[in-house]
Length: 100
Image (cartoon, rainbow, N blue to C red; front, side, top):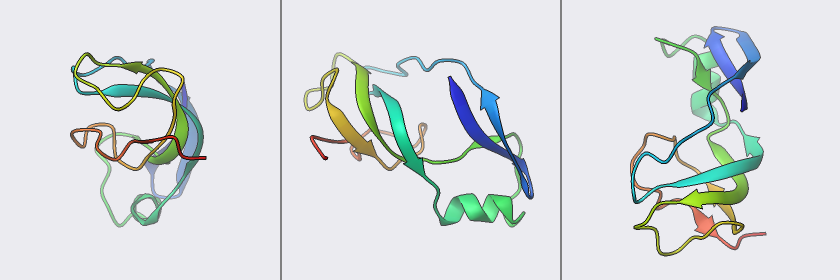
């Protein structure tokens, strides 16, 4: 997959990343169709937050559910949703199905 990443102050690029895999039974994979940056992204760009490795921008996104874990009960593949969490931020309570 492709991602817009910041790898240092003022340095943004498009990068290839591995396709995601489900991290657990309570997770979902979403094919992102649009994403936005937020204030935390700008802090990385301005050099106010240190970067140990490149960070993918646009963690507030809309898209279509591609795959869900066995414990997911409120989302299913092909469902449209919005997400506002970092991928490693815990349970996907922020994914809201059915928004247009």
